[in-house]
Length: 462
Ligand SMILES: Nc1ncnc2c1ncn2[C@@H]1O[C@H](COP(=O)(O)OP(=O)(O)OP(=O)(O)O)[C@@H](O)[C@H]1O
Ligand SMILES: [Mg+2]
Image 1 (tube, helix red, strand yellow):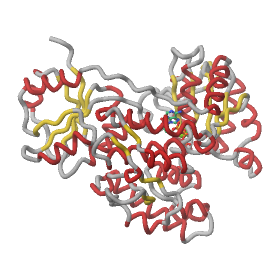
Image 2 (tube, rainbow, N blue to C red):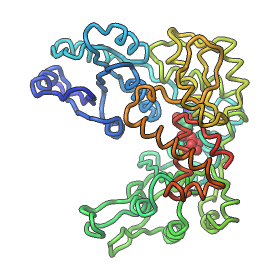
Image 3 (cartoon, rainbow, N blue to C red):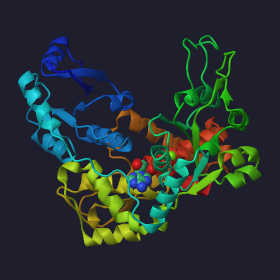
Image 4 (cartoon, rainbow, N blue to C red):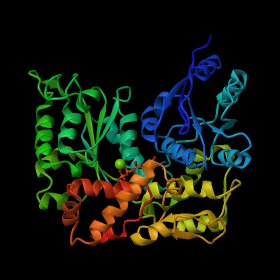
């Protein structure tokens, strides 16, 4: 028998029973059952298919498709809906499901047929766009820098493609067959970043049940990408500097040091010069990591990228409805927009357009821009995006908020708490204290919320 195909199975309603699981195995499917989107997200890169049970609407599908898009993965999604919910089935296909089956469908032959249907090879869309002369220049430069072993610092506004460029630096380098390991220095508490960076030996602290290799070890022979390096706590900056000077690391609790064999690429959207002046960033570390600096221009500075990127986003997220046509009025709007959220915002706008358009034509009425200036109050009121209204500016909330899955609900409450704190405080520092988090965590949370389409007008002014 052919090897089983690994499939992520998410059914928020009922547990799968052994009989169904066995029949699925007969059809060639090895089901990996997950219960939350977070769990699903961590396992996405290991499977060939995702099976979702939809209940009220397609919001679960939309969330999963957006996770896939963020990870640049092209994995087919099959949806299960109640028999008779024809409209939901149609909506699922429209929103990118590759196939829809009834929830009680346990006939191995039917699933096998679905597998064959899905297995048809699909043309891979081109992954990156560098069409504008400014981007082409940057790409050529990056390819040249990639050849050298030098530590490189990527700067540029949020969503402009720093991580994309870091991957290109890796792919174009002599280390391309080695690993590319990324660590976001803003996402975690200080002790955890330290552990993630340098690792530990079993027993080094309570709860250290196993040896753990940090990213410096994991990236051995390859590239280590330290994202948001400007958010790294000063104590760790000192430690990092020492590691870069000595080219050696010691796991927590270990006796012996290990040689470091990584090419370091760091990124920040903070003004590091200002951070140095305010003593939040070590100048000597800055010089150490910025042997070469590459600045990502904002999307507005490279207008010829806009339309090819829009097309790429449609092809990536809505491959089933290709070829896509963008109407002249939509094009005019896309070109006129200033794109404060850069490529990520463009991606959000095109994904919303996919949901709003029924066919393969995108018009101005389907374009809903992220609004970086609307205040918090309206974020709640404008979630329902009308289909026939003129181009809109809303405090764009992800479609899933309406479906109120736990993840979105948590994000939404967090958003409200943060905005309330920012409103009643005189500075971000004060707001962070009121929230019981560090200024660094607050900055990171604000960036995260922005990525999820929440407006942050209050935050911008603080
Ligand atoms: N040149 C490009 N071609 C195609 N997609 C791109 C390009 N640049 C960026 N993107 C997409 O835009 C999104 C944002 O890019 P990325 O995460 O690299 O930005 P960033 O500068 O690291 O953002 P942040 O500052 O918020 O961390 C990603 O989904 C990425 O795939
Ligand atoms: Mg980034």
